[in-house]
Image 1 (tube, rainbow, N blue to C red):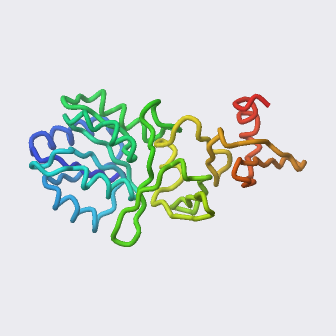
Image 2: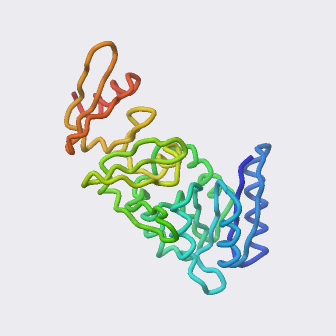
Image 3: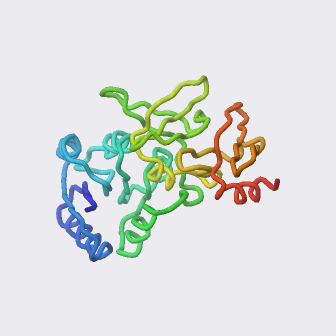
Amino acid sequence: MMHILIVEDERPTAEDIKLLVKQILKKEAASIHIETTLDDALAYLETKPIDVMLLDLNLNSKDGFQLLKKAVSKSFHTIVISANINRAIEAFEYGVLDFIPKPYNIERIKVAFARLQSNHAVKGQAIKYLSIKKGHEVKVIPIEDVRFFKSANIYVELHLVGNRIEIYDKALKKLTPLLPFNYMRIHKSFIVNIDAVTEILTSGRGKYQVVLKSGDCLPVSRYKVAELKKILNC
């Protein structure tokens, strides 16, 4: 069952969004909860696991970005529905799945939910930062500091410059819809920036590796080799 949280200070609007989401998901089971204040939403997220949050950025004159920056460090995806379109680029850079300007409609919300299954972000709407939880604080890491991404079960290891490793609270499949087109899942456990690949090595018996500019040598699935060679023209 998909668990969805709607954070919208106007109750009639929240109920309308809930109705549209139910129509989009149709027979797919979903639990949809509504909160109308920033504080209540924060409290709800402390105790309830969710898969998707639909967030307005103006909550009774409080800035929804306070919630957004905490939300994108968690395992669920965030879709912003807001009239505050001048903050759309900033929202994408911090890791929202989509930004729907008000007035919204069912077709636009449907597109946002379809992006849950995407392999990349829409051009011009990819993240520039990754937010991770460090105790009670949220730390922001520029994506350009990541050498490669490695699956760690329900989390992702961010292998950073300087041989540092941080844990990102999303699974690899949830990370892919946020990444730019130059990032590729080369193996079930690894995503790399293909612009950082310097060569492809083979050790025979169908085993392949890539060498990155950082010197890292990572495995490549044999099912991805042909696609990668085509992209790299090699």
